[in-house]
Image 1 (cartoon, rainbow, N blue to C red):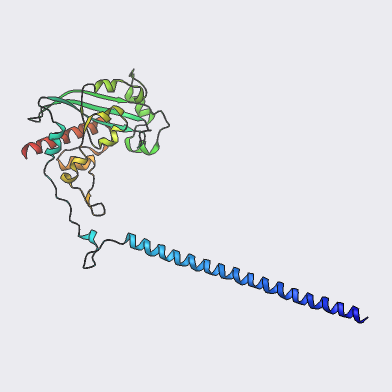
Image 2: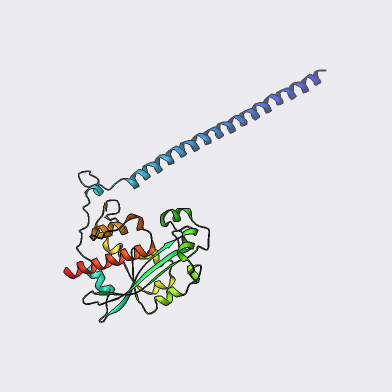
Length: 279
């Protein structure tokens, strides 16, 4: 009997000891887990604050010794009266040469979009006197390969019905990319002009090899529409803003018509030549 009680006592003691050890181990794990979660949270807060401080430091405007915003003190770049250096470089020949002034209206803003209308005017120009003589014109309308882009059509107003009406009974290609006549029209001409010609030329691959003059970029500091402090340069002038600067009259409803825009770009180019000639 005594032996049985001893055995039960030993078993009970071992049970209590083992339970104590198990509970203690679980408690340590709980504390460790809580500590880990706490420090993880602290680390997140510290990192977020560091990132916030770095962000503020990165975007903090440059200041001078008086603590003023340096961008507010920027003076606009000087303006010019003419673009003679660019014009002379563009017309760097000894005899009369041919140039084409063009404009395209498109179904979107990237080169993957279709050309809906293409207009071009070919001139012969004397590089010495700057005198220009019109030779011939090209003006056609095309359907897009892809669906009509409503945003583009809202600007150029070239709906399917309008294009159909203006093509009339024309026998030329339905899509600009299939019409080789425009490249033939441009054959032998090495110099091209347009307002924002980098946009137009992305739709006309063969222009990449030609000499180009942009009536928008060359007039930034001549038209001087608005000085953008954040870019420290003049705003790119629109076709209408450039036309107004040179005293060219136009009707707003005519804007974004390819031939009208080409005619305006041609008039702007002529006024640029005149200003350069006067010095």
